[in-house]
Image (cartoon, rainbow, N blue to C red; front, side):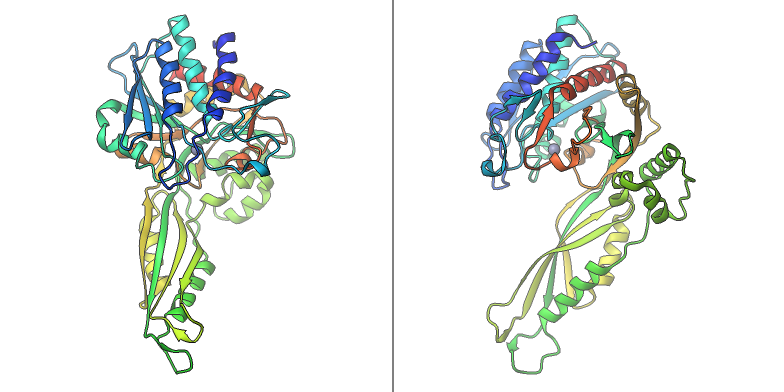
Amino acid sequence: MADGQALDEVVTFTSDLIRIDTTNRGGGDCQERPAAEYAAEQLAGAGLEPVLLERTKGRTNVVARIEGTDPSADALLLHGHLDVVPAEARDWSVHPFSGEIRDGVVWGRGAVDMKNMDAMILAVLRSWAREGVRPRRDVVVAFTADEEASAEDGSGFLADRHPGLFEGCTEGVSESGAFTFHDGAGRQIYPIAAGERGTGWLKLTARGRAGHGSKVNKENAVTRLAAAVTRIGEHEWPLRLTPTVRAALTELAALYGIEPDLTDVDALLEKLGPAAKLVEATVRNSANPTMLDAGYKLNVIPGEAVAYVDGRYLPGGEDEFRTTLDLLTGPDVEWEFHHREVALQAPVDSPTYAAMRAAVEEFAPEGHVVPYCMSGGTDAKQFSRLGITGYGFAPLKLPEGFDYQALFHGVDERVPVEALHFGVRVLDRFLRSA
Ligand SMILES: [Zn+2]
């Protein structure tokens, strides 16, 4: 059981890490190094030997390994990113990099994404050092740079250049799971992430015949692009149930006492009310046009027109995604991946999933654990290249009115001290039993 010092430290570490501004605007100017050094210092204080690794100066990652008692067991990766998305101070009630603790709540950018989890990991490992606890499996801890942009200086770099540090790791645990989802009717649901949709950010290029805007032109690049963009935006993607989403729907239906009719998922989602939010973005692929770029003068037809589309595909859905895009864009518009990341699928019948579920249920007996698939992505995508299956498990018990998903990258991001205490207890229990 996590001790009182661990409960104090998780709050201090969260606050301290928030005060270290690691804003990542994606332009390469982020400096994770001070946060990495802070984490390394806490790990060293727990008797571990952290290594600091950089591909680019100042973009620092930290990795350490805790030897398990069973050398034949597979290792477990525990990872958290150190960077955060930008925050505009004038929009906030409390300065986003103050780490202020007010009325039992820690405020600031990173309070839920994900300096809270970084702090929980540090607090748990330090309490183990005090108590002489050793896990069964080796636990590899990684604090990464650059998750909020390309991950090229973070998990991507670690997976490509330092695979040896992750030797034996078969499963990974990180952000975006096991938080309290209040359904508005008194139920508390704890979704554990067991999969992620893939990212397919697309660049569309239409070519045509440039010419005078007053002439007949049947090969107008702007018209071609606009038609393709409309077809993509209006396309109704067919329903596809992955194993995780199938399990989520079945378990939610049972919780609500509804017939789990998976032949009519749209009707089932309707009946689930607010809880449908946990699954609705992951029952099909999606593709939303987001940017247009064409032309330079009102009376000149340009020879080329470009658009960008934010596409996401389900685990197992990439081939269908590609084929559908070929059809929707048609012969006059080319498309390519501007950025592509794999989709992930993790089993919900694994011992590791069962251990996460049991740990939540022990400390939140009123809660209902369900698996879910993330609509977006995390560092788990990069680590999957090493054969590591990723779960989202950063436990937080949140009171009603704390909309976790709205706080992610949101204004007034904050986390209750009680939620951090719960997180430490649950993470400690899970890691001891994993
Ligand atoms: Zn995050």
